[in-house]
Image (cartoon, rainbow, N blue to C red):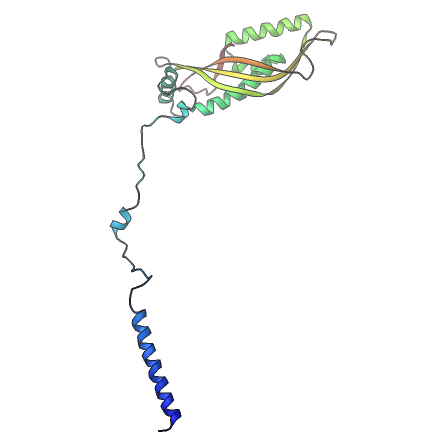
Length: 219
């Protein structure tokens, strides 16, 4: 047997040895390869459970009044009487009502705001507007914006369903008063003044009419 054939046989033997060795190594589960674990119910149960806490404080209430206060209890009773009632939504409506009513009064547009006023408030506003007209005065007013607003108090009469919410407003507006000759007698053109009010809104919970009525004003 010549030398080239002997060399080929030696190389073939080495190759076979390496193949068998490599197969033995790859066939084991040693090193970095981790065994695949079957998915069982025990594995799923190891996930953290998140407990749902019911009966906690109503954020819609305690975001606006102190927890456990008479006002908070009154608001909770209002919600019990009318589950669709939402304090945050009420305050959004009160924000728009404040601008509409205040500007309606300043401009003497009483017919526009009458449906949203209680009888006493309407009478008071109307008398002021009539007095201006009698003196030949005109008001030029523009609403700049609402600087602050907060729920001041809440009262609920369960026997009648009557609810009263007091809201504190701090608004900013421009206002000048002109006499019958057009001269400015109060205010200054473009000067922003701050208006502070506490308004009381009333409604009977559960009634078909969803509108709140302004029944009192103060500072």
